[in-house]
Image (cartoon, rainbow, N blue to C red; front, side):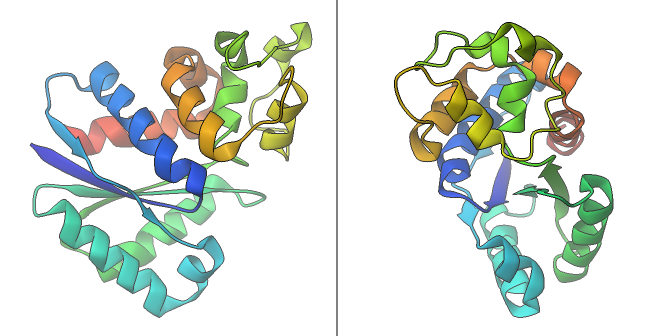
Length: 195
């Protein structure tokens, strides 16, 4: 059995990412038993800009995943280029834990962009109401993906710690992979590191 330990930046991702990774396991690598461990939550700016924090969290992740496991760093790209910033992070991480497999995925803008990519699959779920124009929106363009979702919640606001895990269990993975490069990157990293 292989283990995966994630490093994430938000409370929502702490609960949502294990749900999503278990779905990826069932969908992409059903033949491989995977232990999705509880993510390590970090403050993104401190994690990326303080070498001692970066090293400490990576060493903890390496210890938790064991010799056969791997480390997934999942952060929001915000305004950074996911490819360029991700390459920089993975290079730095390999210096700290060269003895572990490491994947870095930066969600273009925010994790919630993946929900936008398959928003039609969430229609009617937890008060979410998609609009006809949503099928043409570039999922990774809205700067405030949480706000985009909030505008479409019928009777309440979008709650990161409650809706993010629920939407992670519901959204159409195939559609998200087709419409989001950063989600496609997550799928590719999952397949490469789990097999």
